[in-house]
Image: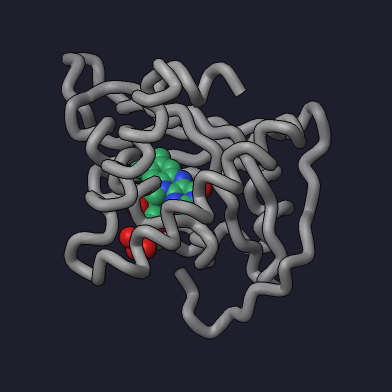
Length: 172
Ligand SMILES: Cc1cc2nc3c(=O)[nH]c(=O)nc-3n(C[C@H](O)[C@H](O)[C@H](O)COP(=O)(O)O)c2cc1C
């Protein structure tokens, strides 16, 4: 996350056929960015390559959401999630992301691969309310416990609704 960029809360909406693609190494440093990614995030390729993917992190995203992402990737599973990202100008764009391990010819995980599309407005509204709750839980939990506390909150909430994170995300 670029700390010196102030969020404008102005939304950039993806077109229906926009697909944002990026690849990272095992540490989350960007190794590939497609043209749509550069256009929407408003960064030239040289500002993205070899840079941590948190360059587009928006402060409205709870830390637990990213812990869930990395916990999923570490066990070599694919992750689905809604992400509010920040452009170079502080504007934001919502995406529905699929992130998967990227394997070499021998099947060894050598990095990660992400493909993102425009989310339904109703899904954004649903997830935004959940992220707000997560942020609130994180504020109360304190720095060290924040991600685990907000994940526990969501898991418990979804359990009461008779569902899991994975099923819920694909249902909204
Ligand atoms: C393939 C891949 C794509 C990612 N895409 C994004 C993204 O679009 N936005 C984002 O904020 N984080 C993304 N991340 C997660 C970041 O690596 C990072 O965990 C997150 O921005 C939180 O950063 P922080 O812990 O430094 O605050 C991605 C990670 C991987 C492996």
